[in-house]
Length: 206
Image (tube, rainbow, N blue to C red; front, side, top):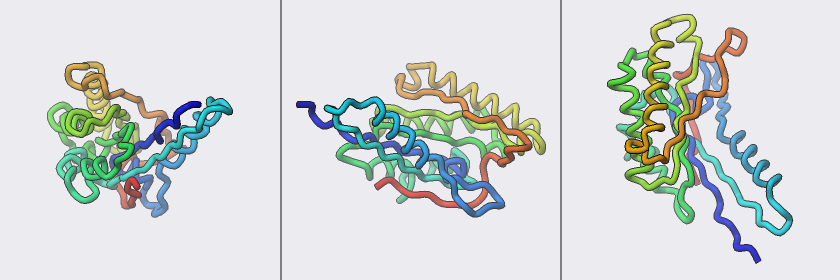
């Protein structure tokens, strides 16, 4: 008989894009529940009748308005990244998905000297320090702020994403454990969305 496989546990961590908020709306629409449903459906569809269907749990924690540096500095707080990772045991987290950097553009932080180092430090915290098997670095998405308010922010976002991609491809830096993932949607006036900021909350891993 086949041995039961361990549940898959995933943490999505970041700013308002992870929390699922978009000012001026107060409702939360995090992507984590949709990711969980899609993964569970995919696993169920690929499983045979003799196999035990692996349970997938995706939890999220998003801090609207926070920069990557703030997320890093709060890692040891009660709902900080390191604390959330250590809270999940038996089995531990299989994957951490990080989406950060959008709010940094509003503060006009330097992409190469401030934003990229902070985001990559979050990934190294997961893989080097906490032994998470894999992390995914989601690219900073396009936004209304970049397109209509501050075109320089779009250039900065490109540099951030370029730096993240280089980090992921440099296995000496990333240990080959971090995968770069382009943001799956493009901003248009029809879709709207500010790409960071606002207020909201999230649910910690259980």
